[in-house]
Image (cartoon, helix red, strand yellow):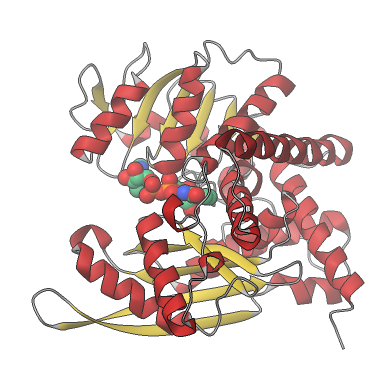
Length: 422
Ligand code: NAD
């Protein structure tokens, strides 16, 4: 089995996922047959979605659902609405979901969906028509025992409500367990909305403890002040960390004394942007990455840190709230600089963990208090962090390889025990 160079530059997100798979599979000494079985997606559905737009014309959208693995349980993964969605990206995201569910040891496989569209330019009713057409098109693949979608970038609890309704219409009765991240009134879980950011926060606390850095007074930078990034920032702020800079797709803002995070969240909610927030100056994206800080949280999209900008990073910890924000060649630079990386499949696994809790509650028709959700989530995140850290220190491999070894190792064990080959 060829050993790939850690510094190779994959040309796509899926190639990066395969590259990182090979690094971990090599470190695990995984048999070639098993590698071949678990490396590639099990099932790919590509759909054409004709939607009547508000001006009367029919627009054709392209959508995808990829099930990477169902070896450990039903497929699980979000649905992304974004102009840059491609099949390659969805395959990468589905692959990461498989390893992520295994890292936090929940009984799901990995899946992901997406539609190439510009949701910001669409009306609510156009989004509803698009979502219902997509749900009907992927219907043969999804279901509480088969594959359970959830929100991702530019989809939310409303999107999940439409999918749940479209799916339920075909059965004649409500089936809340077909999606997670639903509104609470439809069987959603308390704590799901903030679960990803909260999970990021718990892993950062664990990393700070390991590195013997007190949380009080640490300087934090957040690239992508959306659901995951803003909640992580808010929780760190509540523990007296200083969030000195944040960005969204339009602007980066900075205050050396720390941004007022509760006010910034309200400002973003009200205006839809960060730009113009009182008491902050605008800086350039490259400046944000090079700020002198303790913790950098990339919480936007893939490939935002690569070999060209990683040398400027001065953070001690990079906590990957986003999926795939650091490219393999960016990884190599951060590693050489001694940056402590909390890899995506560990760092942002709080979202899928509480999605699992939601699915369990739906299946049992018994709902938990918010504090129960937080306590269970904290236990899962801290246990998973400790499991990954142990591989990192025992095997002397980078944190990303350690997380992949844990996830891939568990999937390999599952297919061997099931005897999933003729
Ligand atoms: P979101 O849509 O709520 O937020 C994304 C934010 O990133 C927005 O504020 C957007 O303006 C900003 N952004 C987009 N392009 C940017 C750029 N070039 N520079 C700076 N900011 C930019 O999405 P989210 O749910 O918070 O997801 C963010 C990341 O976290 C994604 O990679 C997603 O896959 C990952 N993630 C989310 C969840 C979840 O439950 N929400 C779970 C796991 C992983």
